[in-house]
Length: 142
Image (cartoon, rainbow, N blue to C red; front, side, top):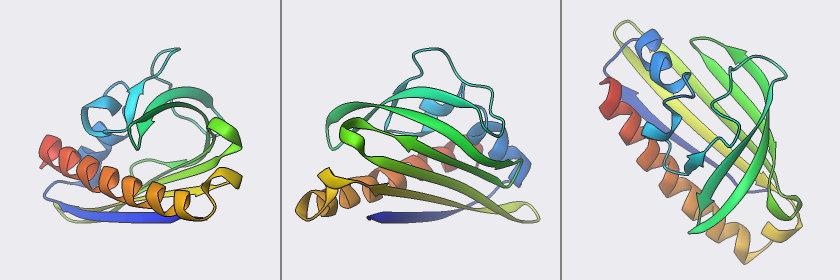
């Protein structure tokens, strides 16, 4: 099961970071894999499910997400079902130190189609996307 983690320090409070990262009407401003929410941006709460169209490795896909954990302004964890039976996980974690916040984004993938070389390619693509997304997030709030 490939898992990738990216971390960035942001010169802003956790509340300021969360105001952007936890507002899914602004999700596409920083998350580069996001294409759209077909039913509109979800209101995040434990157990909420929603659909997201994404692009990863240059391929479009659709993920049905469930909010597994949310504790504003610190944690947002989601579990998803993607194309071809792939299971996904995404965790955004904010650790505050005064007016600076460490933002950690972890993505995990599991399922038959991503065993072997495909999993390695997916992990590399997700690692790059996570790094670019966190840079965009830092630019929006930092």
